[in-house]
Image (cartoon, rainbow, N blue to C red; front, side, top):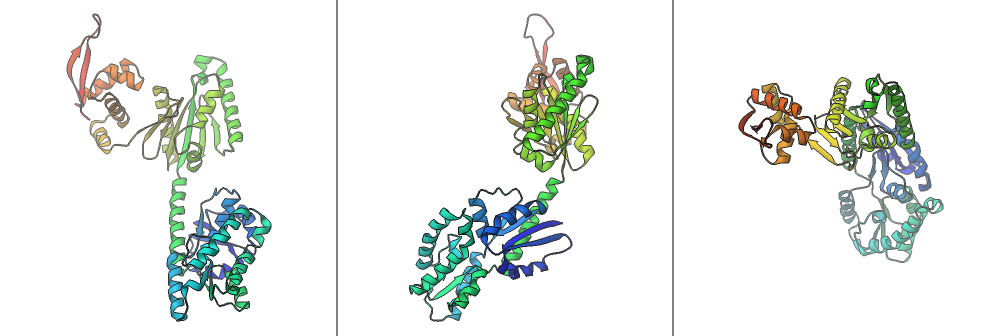
Length: 435
């Protein structure tokens, strides 16, 4: 279900009754109305956390932006489309056969830069200067509609306008009472339906993304009792204390769980994306490594299944230790994202379908094959030695030899030569790898 809050002028509520045709069991609409524009800010702040999206008109958008409101909830603004405006003007030309369109005062351009004639453009330029200078003033906002109304009346009194066309339903009736020829433009049903359907589609997609589960695993040699003796428990508690301080400082909502020799974090996908600037950095790892006297490693696992998220967090943490990176992320498409602890530079290993297929055929881990591909790309050649792998992947030569022997046994690598880098010692094999 998508929950949408709609903030609009009280007089415009009837125009949105047709939205009930779109409402079904999966979607919920709540209407908030105002009489004066000075009420918009309070309505927005009290409703934004209650809904998946907020709909406001273009005027409300301008006011909220000018006073510095941050749209933490997806916020969409509506206005009659230009198609709606041109249709209205065309119909007016049929209704008022002898009318000179240059004398039509259309206030649509008071909040857009759409000027159908010189009269509208002149009024727009005059009004915009005053609008931008005074919009943050509550008293000025309260008189906003009266100011628009005055513009219409002045245009007619001066003889510049013979017909008013307004997009503000709450001044339409006042113009009619003042015996000023007036027409009202509202968003057409087609415009509103397309607008709402677009919002529902976008918000539904975002909610699906937000259903992803994120698990973070934090480890350190300092958590290992065999290495740090009686200090291990203290070091874990100290790390948890720093995590709580991080939560307080940055107003985060993640859950911290303590285990025997590691710490887990449970956080929503949207919060992780915001915290990490779309997976470009890891402020949690950076803060812990800065405040603690020992190194920590963080592995993040992202998936729609909690067990898979746990498994990926474990693999990512293991990878962080091997690569000597403070943080590694494995996302829901099995990408490995390496975050450098010093410069926070991102390195991504893409999920390669060919590598995945080769992994299934040979039984060799796709992770190992992807690592090997990374070494080949860095070196610029598919002719490599165990030293090349050890250097680029920050593992021991022995581990690199085991990797190459396994690849050779599976027919992915074969020896093409040997070389002596020193007078003594065993010769180094040069392998040609085919991935």
